[in-house]
Amino acid sequence: MLRNREIVADLDSRFLNEKRRIRIYLPKGYDGQKRYPVLYMHDGQNIVRRAEASHRSWKVTKALKRMGKEVIVVGVDCVQPRNRDYYPYQIENAISMKGMESTSKEYLSFLIDEVKPYVDGNFKTLPEREHSYLAGSSLGGCITAYCAMTRPGVFSVYGVFSPALSMMKDLFRKDFEKYGTDMQGTYFVSVGSMEHKQFKDRPMMRDLFRRDYEMYTALLEGCGANLAKKKYYVGGEHTESHWAKQFYDFIKVLP
Image 1 (cartoon, rainbow, N blue to C red):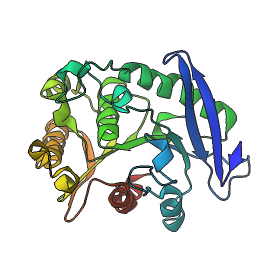
Image 2: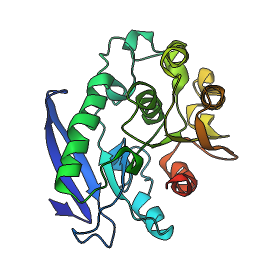
Image 3: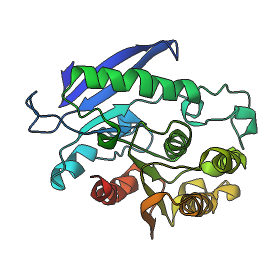
C-alpha cells in the first residue's frame, strides 16, 4: 500500500507469532531497474513520521536526499513495550522492566530471515552484505550493537546512536569479550552531552549514555573494529530531532 511516499507492509512472522509492520522508502529515482543498497532501521514509525511521544522524527528521507545518497530505507515498527524486542537479555537482569519476556533473538530472526528476504524479493536491492546497513538509537542502538556481535555477516555498516547498554548491567560487555573477537563491518557511534535532560527524576540516568558510549567505543577499538566515526555531540539530547542532526554524519559513513 502506497501512502505519502511510504510503502507499508504487514508481515506475518513465524518467529514472533504475530504481524509486524514495516515501512519501505524508495529513492526518488527508483524505476524498478537499477538496484540500490538498503538501510534497515528500528523504531520505523519514527524515522520519517513524527513519534507519538516526542512529536519529532529522524527525517531520514529528507537527509538522504539533501546528501545525494540513493538508498532504500526500511523501517521496522516497534511494538509496545519496545523493550521486548530491543533488550537482548532476560528482562529480570535489567534496571527496570522486571517480569517482561525478552523476544530480541526472535526479533533479529524476524529482521534477518523474514524482513530482509521480503525486501530483497520485492524490490530492486543490492542484497549482499556490503550493501546492507543497520541503525537504531537508545535501545534500538543496543539491539544494533547486539546484532553486530551475534549475527555477523549480514550487515556491513552499523549506526549505533545513544546506546543504553548499561540497562544490561555487565552482560553486554561479558558477551562482547566472548563473541566480539571479529567485529566485521564499519561502525558509527554517537552520544549527546545533554541526553540526561529528559530524565531529571532519575539520577541514575545522568551519565548513563556517556558511559555507555565510552564503554562501547573502547570495546570496538580494543578488538580492532573499523570505528569509522565516534562523536560526542555537545548539546545533543535523547530525542529524534537530535538523532536527525547526527544522521547526516552517519550518511557520510555509508559507502
